[in-house]
Length: 474
RNA sequence: GGCGACGUAGCCAAGUGGCCAAGGCAGGGGUCUGCAAAACCCCGACCGUGGGUUCGAUUCCCACCGUCGCCUCCA
Image 1 (cartoon, rainbow, N blue to C red):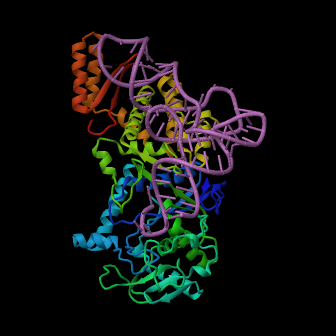
Image 2: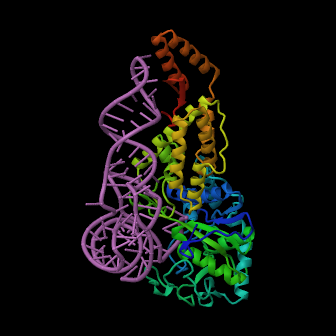
């Protein structure tokens, strides 16, 4: 896998044999998640599924940031307002109501995309004491100091700050280029651990430094350590977190513990919409429900995402989504037919099966899902053209690969094969009609099945086959 | 301004110092078929431009052009 910290491919070596402990940076829930956010969780999902495919047990933690972060790190007095608070004030409800609403929506979207639930989903607001404890630890060690408007991490005490994931040293960056430099800070790049509350802040907590709220980075350190220990295997998130978020996390975590933080770092490249970044704050974003509203299956988006590399990102267009949907429909058609032809009996693949081996090699190579899909296509080919024995093997292969791909292959095949009694009766009647060359009647029945059950009947040399259109509302 | 990523057929996209540069979608032709639908078979690229290294580069190096991102809350 590619490690953002080393900027190169590295063999993965777990801390605990056979286990992957991973922390995935979760969303700030002040608004709906757009498909760009979802895309990065899809990438994290593939990582987890890949490890599980190879027999690893995983411990997967993803945070929910439900405490607003109004300021950026370079200026505690910035005019930026807390986004959750903004939403809450606009609708005149408690911030947690806002957070809860979008959190739920987020999990619904994940479910539609077959993204596995993390094992632990800690919320920032429920871990304030852990954050305070961590800050105290940093102060005690002299890595943090109390200033007029809050507590800051002293970056001068942590050599290499800002260069762990990024070749560009912070001091070459344009400090204060876009925001005022905060005079309370000792060093330009010191970042806030705790901020003193302003009266209008909707969310504030007691602390040894007065009422206030936590800095943006501290939650991830506090919560990852709580659930995964002070050192764990993999930390993942979007590329935007490279700097400053993850650099700050590394600094404050390692300064506090004196131990390495995460062994591997993974950063997902952004999804682009018509070649431009999609962002919550600059607008122009699209939700999963927009995709569904146009009649696409959420899993078509998943398939589209699998066709690209997480390190290069995805340039989303309706045309490419359409292509993914067509591909998914074809898979479902072929798999449905094979399932019906074999009575749903799939043969589990042998370890040395050529396709399985190539598939495993692809996903083991930095999660190359695009190459893995080519193997799935090979299996689809066998499922479409082979004899029954070959079809059974192809199905077994596809079901096996779907543990990583997560396209619900087995489920949709089953669903396609399962028919209501009435539909079965009509199909039988139609078969008789065709035997008797009564095409008028058989066409009527075909029409009927489509209108009443959404079942498309097709005639093949092996008899009738049917499918349910994968496209919603079609 | 600093740093970084990317540029492969109409579209999405994998990949490699040298056998015919994966796969998918769309398109064209064909097979099958009572009709329809599906499926199957066949067809497509001098790998952004210009140099360099090399026996040989799409793959390595340099320059240029173009697109995008980070440097500020964002997956």
